[in-house]
Image (cartoon, rainbow, N blue to C red; front, side, top):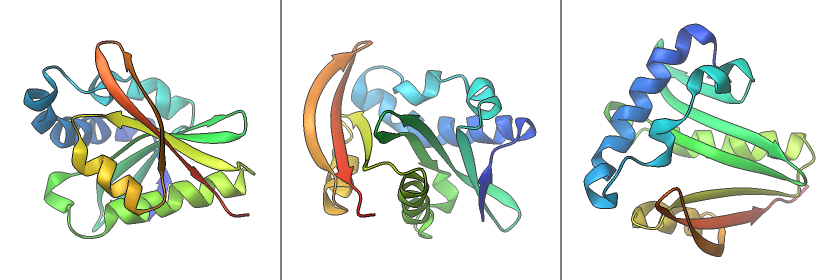
Length: 148
């Protein structure tokens, strides 16, 4: 089940983000961007969703509507729950939500050192649009056109 995150979910959301992104700190040389996000604000703004499985929050998704596109700002699955298809479920939910909001595309960015993420997004139809450095992080920007 995927639902909007509630303020009481904040600690679980932050714990998943911490667990999912900590392994990348060494590779990147600093904390990945999602580790610095204000989840209290994202939850209050209705931008954070949680995936609940077996009564526990196992994944999180942050979607930010933009002009003509939906930004998939963050997606993370608890390392203990990986391999169960939760990431795929969250990605499908993101696309469905973007279509329902009449967005023609969904876009995201990831760190260029997260090569496995870039490969995954490419396999499911995202196309690299550009690369840039922001806040000391080297990012790869990708977009996927959505069929109506």
